[in-house]
Length: 334
Ligand code: KG4
Ligand code: ZN
Image (cartoon, rainbow, N blue to C red):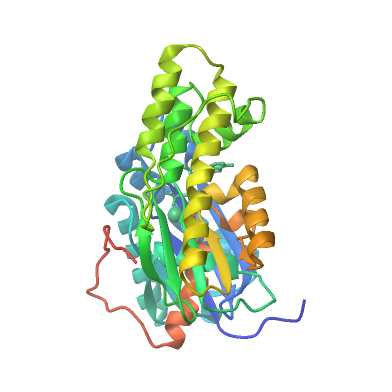
């Protein structure tokens, strides 16, 4: 790989339950990415406890940033800007990374750049990628907190096409995993259970919301609950059939968008991208439609500071620095 050129940017994300910092050169080449997961802290509660998450961020943030600079082999003098997630996210969690990044940038005397966490997920497939991604781009974000479709005619100017009307798809997977008695976070455990079950044994309602780019997962989630109460099917069969229903919804919305808009590339970001069955379906869509589908490397599917740093680089190039008095925006959308 040729040596990366361009300025070095440090990015921090503490939007939810992971404390992360990434260092990126020229907007694309990741020099380091450190993610301190809080999964084991929240697992006994079966979900994220906001107060516990923000306290854990406070304890970890300084170490995570120091570790990222050490692994990248860069000093603060070499960093040209600091990006931090401004929103959306849990207020108490966002504040920790935001104030830490702000203080650090003003102490060093470099620009401080607020980044939209959803735009950063859409940016994650561009990290560490040599080839150019052609626009217009259709973007899909599938995480624990968000499920949405976005569209950009030119680099990184995504606008919202549609989003979930109830649960995010990761949230629905986590809730059904919990119903089935699987540990938190449920997505990966549900995937494992699904491998031993049949996706065709239980019929799920088709919750497609035709003619819109919106999603809904609460109907199939309730159906999974009812089926579980009936006590007729194995945990594995429920997991496999529910996972299939979730993937069907995602695939049908992608196909609807491809057929409605001029699309040259598809990017997909967020924790649920780790799902292998979904990856197979996306690869099938790529072959059938002849539109390349770009996924982030596994380490950039979850929340990470590298995607914040990467996008912050391009915002810096556009002169978009945040001001000292700017605050977090927990309800920020695209
Ligand atoms: O992007 P992310 O780390 O956090 C948010 O920004 O929300 O996504 C976390 C979500 C969780 O709901 C988790 O269960 C899901 O991604 N997830 C998976 C898998 N790995 C993580 N869902 C399905 N299959 C997986 N292998
Ligand atoms: Zn996220």
